[in-house]
Image (cartoon, rainbow, N blue to C red; front, side, top):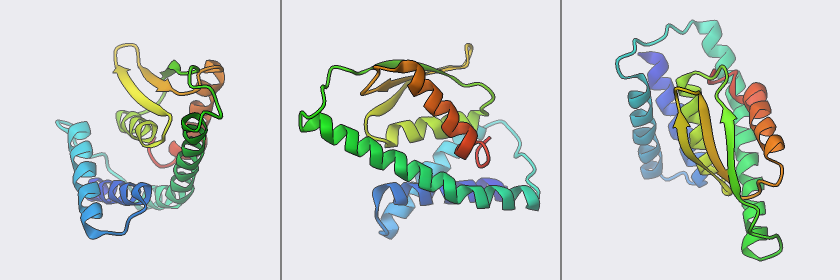
Length: 163
């Protein structure tokens, strides 16, 4: 039960960090949305036991994860600004197929949330039978590189927090 509560609080924290707001009402909305995501993802599944060393490792890894998500949002905002200002063509968009690989259902949900938070990309669909994520990105000129970048992000930052 405690790991789920901590996950909800961490998702609320990520939400207010993405908004750039310290308003308690925004934190409340983030916690409610995080709680709904955790409830939806874990309904019918018992809570996984989380030992203190595992929790400490995840808590330490959470800081670089949040910074990496923030950087992704900053770079996505920059790229979208270039498209909006017509300094970069807007006809490069497309859908990429990202394999879920070893990601847990929770990690897939977090990946989808990150894709939607970052300007220039949005999660379109999840194919659980094939274990694929369909993501629309603004610049699909190098789909292999885009998929590779998402896999590297998972391995480097997300896996340690949300395996």
